[in-house]
Image (cartoon, rainbow, N blue to C red; front, top):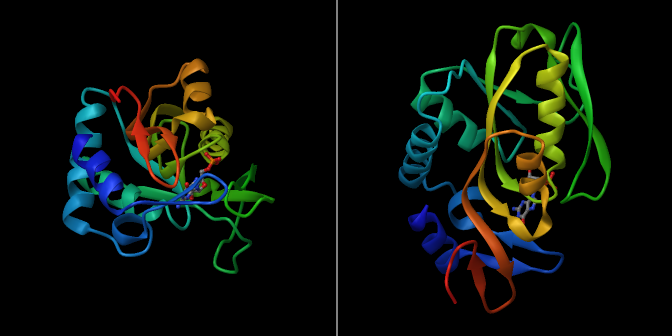
Length: 193
Ligand code: 5GP
């Protein structure tokens, strides 16, 4: 999505440890008009594919997943990262290594919110090594549901997670794929230098 690439170039900053900061429109302040455009583009990318729910992981995935689910007119479910007093009953769990916190934690979804007849679009804000999305795929499989596809707002292609998920046979779309990034330059997949 060209407009997203341009926005990342204008507003993104590269932090140590291969972290791209886009707090001005995506991770802290949310550009809601632009979010709706990203959701519309996601809907277009998955046109013709049956989707009954959108699934993401808290907290930073929630804004995009909600916008996509609103565009598709389906419910959104998010996995919780921490044991929570307001979760009751049986849950699906999957261990996920966190890129940002460098630790492994369980993500959890209540069994009552996903059923075996669901076709689920998995979304997230960022895709780096792919652990968050793979954990969500694991939960969809535990529920006996179908993965309709996966979509990240920003994929860091050089970290390999997106291509691994494609090799696993899933439809994996990203609205922007960063191929290289440094303090001075951000280059996107397919972009001529
Ligand atoms: P993965 O599991 O694919 O390695 O990492 C994806 C998760 O880590 C996302 O849910 C996102 O919250 C976080 N993340 C990974 N890389 C970045 C980054 O460069 N910037 C930001 N803001 N979050 C990131």
